[in-house]
Image (cartoon, rainbow, N blue to C red; front, side):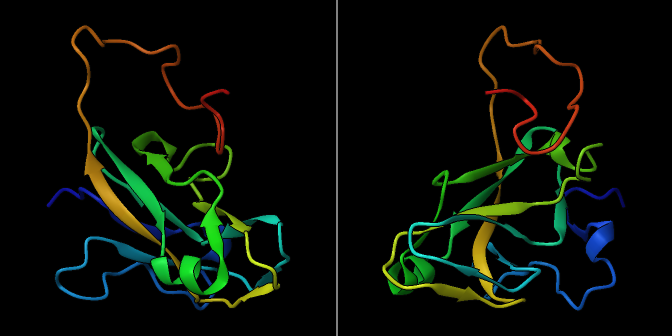
Length: 151
């Protein structure tokens, strides 16, 4: 059977004691994505949190990253970009192997401790549609990791 979508560890975290994202219940839309390392987030700080994973999917899909609501309510954390979008061609890119990093901001007044294995985000796979006449792009292949498609 051909693989359609899922998660793998990036090489740098393959030996770490991490778990691949999973859904908490049979009706959960999102796959819980956890921190691969412990760190502190000071009030007002923006940090990049490694997850140790990459995602593969069909060409007409993307992985949407959403903050877990409990982190926003209890700790004042948010994803810096509101919602992250992982394109299908981000997988195994030459810059960072497709490593999914979470860019989080602490809008609270106290430092927040992130523990390895702490579930931070939910990843939901989505299909997308193209507009009529959309048959090309400026780039043939992705050339790098985060921000590689330009500003």
